[in-house]
View 1 (cartoon, helix red, strand yellow):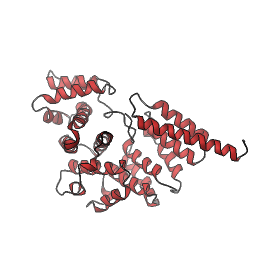
View 2 (cartoon, rainbow, N blue to C red; view 1 turned 135 degrees about the horizontal axis):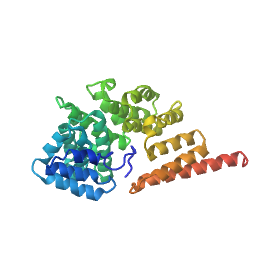
View 3 (cartoon, helix red, strand yellow; view 1 turned 135 degrees about the vertical axis):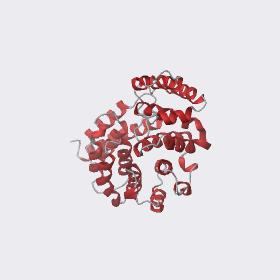
View 4 (cartoon, rainbow, N blue to C red; view 1 turned 30 degrees about the vertical axis):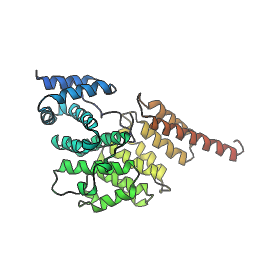
Length: 317
């Protein structure tokens, strides 16, 4: 599945060779190495292996502790994503927070993890805003990973439902100034401002990408805001500049291609827009959610119709 962030399945996956080297004869780590060796697209097999790993006594605590070693970390986070997906409507936000706290997740790990599990929950019909409240997010004296996880999850729920005003209000009530938050949280705030077509959000485009480095989740939040906003000064050109970020040069990213095509259409560069949307469609991996494919096909139809209308107005030239 490809999400609004361009993610594909449960994260980037671990290096199975690294996990195998760390197995050391322990059944838990051997099982983790076997899990890491299964391709990400094999969702059913990975789900079964993750459930088997987590069935042993104390497995969650041991895996969380083992995740502090770099070689195992990606695999453990992949297991955690599947565990959250299995939690169901009642407990999934609590379980996500628990994992991120236990592994002492960084802001970029929290961003990737929360974006993936929040998108999956929304697809299943129970987004983060159903399970969390503003009071939960603003609760005092939470461990930093837990506080960040709640903010990321709740803000993502508002973002995916396009509740920009509620998202701006959330950040206005937060005790930490937006400028002092992690780059992904700052990007989610910028999404809300841009999504309301407020040019004030353009200031984030100057600062957040530099702070985020090559984190594509952060870049996608900014692209999403530019896409949603209307008549933002140089909005399409700013979109094209973000799509040209080096982080997108090292991976196929059909959602970035979709944003590029929309920007080119707004600039009336229809031939380039058509090429961009075709690349995005070709880049969709097997198993992509049908709603994502429909969005891309709809954009292709819009580009074609506008290009045809432009030819008609110019007398066929």
